[in-house]
Length: 125
Image (cartoon, rainbow, N blue to C red; front, side, top):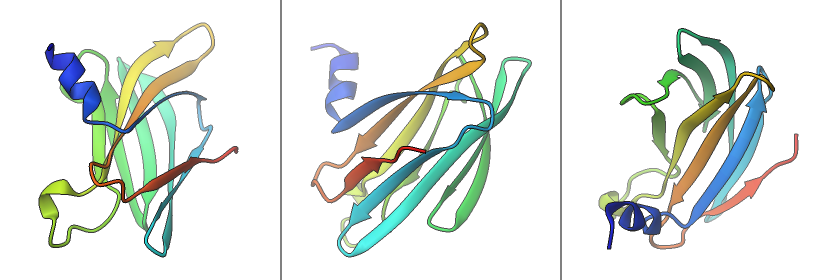
């Protein structure tokens, strides 16, 4: 078994997304009685760095992601850490490519949810 196969098996959902500058992607996260919205977009691609703006559960953040670099992705927990703090579901957003011709950034979204606690809905616009 290769390392990449093990890595891929850790995720229940893998989604590819292409976004133009300032185009928002909205993802609804549901668990228990909660519904939370994750929104992200990019605003600038300069010197091989992609500036990302994101918001989840009232927390706003910004990242600069680079291709072929340690800062190629960001991760966040989808629900608060409780008694099972080591198995908290999370999402990983990875910057994969910048298409200069179409002026789009390509991402892969990974959802880790070993106990099937989360439902993900990719919203249209």
